[in-house]
Structure formats: C-alpha cells, structure tokens
Length: 113
Image 1 (cartoon, rainbow, N blue to C red):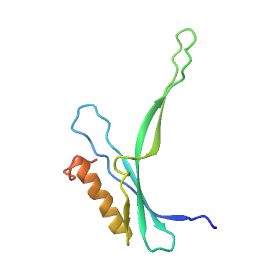
Image 2 (tube, rainbow, N blue to C red):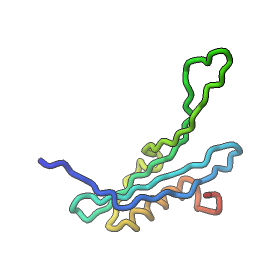
Image 3 (cartoon, helix red, strand yellow):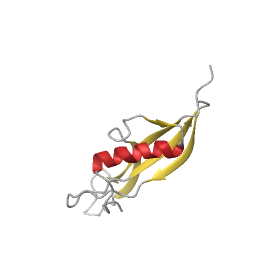
C-alpha cells in the first residue's frame, strides 16, 4: 500500500500576539495548509514559534564569559492546533484557524505586531 502524502500548499505566519502581561513574550504562530491527497480537502496544522536561550551546562574557566545563543524553534501547538481544521479551500481552512485563535486570544484589536 503506498504511503499517503500531503502537499503543503500555503504557509502563513501570523503577526505576533502581544499578551497584556508586562514582560511576557509575544505569541508567534505559523500555519501550514496542506492538500489531503486526492480528496479535494485541505487541512491546517498550527505551529508556535518559540525562542530558546541555549548556554553550555559546563562552567567557565577563570571567570571567562560563556556565550548564550538564542534559537527559534517551531513546535506543533496542541492548544490551538489540537483542533481539526478541514475544508474545501485554503481560505476556508485559514478562516477556521483564525477564528480559533480569536476564540483563544480575542479578536485582533491592535495587540498583534
């Protein structure tokens, strides 16, 4: 039996959502829309972009400063992306995702970006 393949047809990055909590990092999301084989359906997967600060776990010698590095990591978002987003067009699926994000964070009112 051949493996089922999905074609990524669109990738979107949502403007950052800035929480109302002072010092909190903005939420950054990536949305991938894929075609589900020959079914004519489209599906979306939501990812969160996280920034991690990585530094060595070993100590420095004679007080030397050990550099830390910031890296972005894309992780599947279980809170937003745990829902099933499926529709007959890219636009329909994208609307579902954005409605879910608005349900969690409230409608966009200038807090993004």
